[in-house]
Amino acid sequence: MAERIKLYQRLAQQIEQSIRVGQYGPGTRLPAERDLAEKFKVSRPTVREAMIALEIRGLVEVRHGSGVYVSGDLPVDRVPAELDVGAFELIEARLMFEGEAAALAATVMTEAELAQIGEILQRMETVDPASAEELALDRQFHMAIAEGTQSSLVAQTIEHLWDLRERSPLCRHMFEQARRLGINPRPSEHHRIYDALRAREAEEARLAMRMHLMRVSEDLLAVTELELIENAKREIGEKRRRIAGAPGFSAVPR
Image (cartoon, rainbow, N blue to C red; front, top):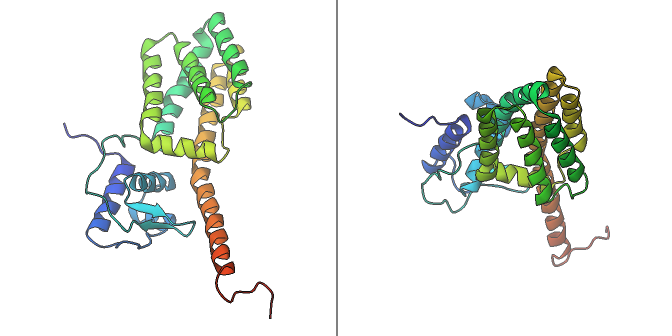
């Protein structure tokens, strides 16, 4: 059976092909995100995942806020197999599975399992939000809910999704960039999920989990925008320094 190619991978392959046949030469600026989304009939998240995949493979580079450009020195024509899942695709799956898992757990999990989630939350509030320890606790929180469904298949599925998040370079790139830009998990969102579980309110637990994961998706969309803004600021600063150091330049108006 042929392996199913994901939408962002198909888009990345199409753009890569255009690059390699010379439609976009080295140093050429690629069309804007909005134009690519309209041309290929895909969403903004799909375009961004495709751009990040191409960046990881060394085919394109973000040039300080002005756009995405074809790299001057193209790498060997190969597609690494480890680019197996995009962050937005992953969150879509988590929305579906973890939302329902939270609803089920609210009705069947034991008091001991609820207490364990409460302890995890307390520990999360005492660590640096950007630390590796916090990320480990975040996974423990979600896995504790999955295990609270009393279904080993549900728990294994959600554990697999978390493994994908940590294994895929595409996912790691976006989540690590989010943390570098100060976008970290919100304790209030985890508490809302926990409160719904403790109240045994299945619908509230489902809604709280879905709202939490939708916020994660929104944060990741903001990451690329913030990254471009920061790059633009650095570029402006570098240009000012170069101009200020140029022979004959004077900052005093004449």
